[in-house]
Image (cartoon, rainbow, N blue to C red; front, top):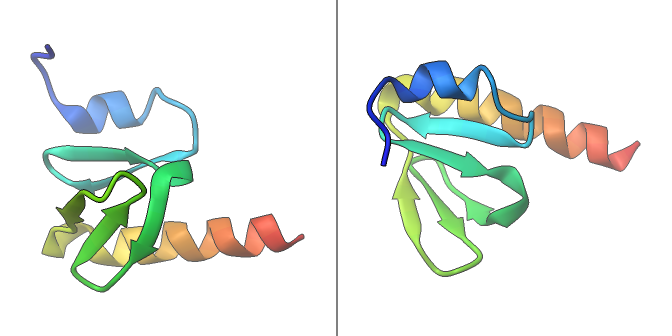
Length: 70
């Protein structure tokens, strides 16, 4: 249980977590696939990417993919 802003927690946790929505902070390592509007997790859950986070999520995912290729 947590009482506060997820955005504040996102600043303090490891880089493999990304915030995709005001209510969702996800671990990059558990993403199965990603579309423009949602992320499908390895456990089968589909989580929406809010409109205000879409640009940031795409940027973070691209950076992670390129970093992993090196």
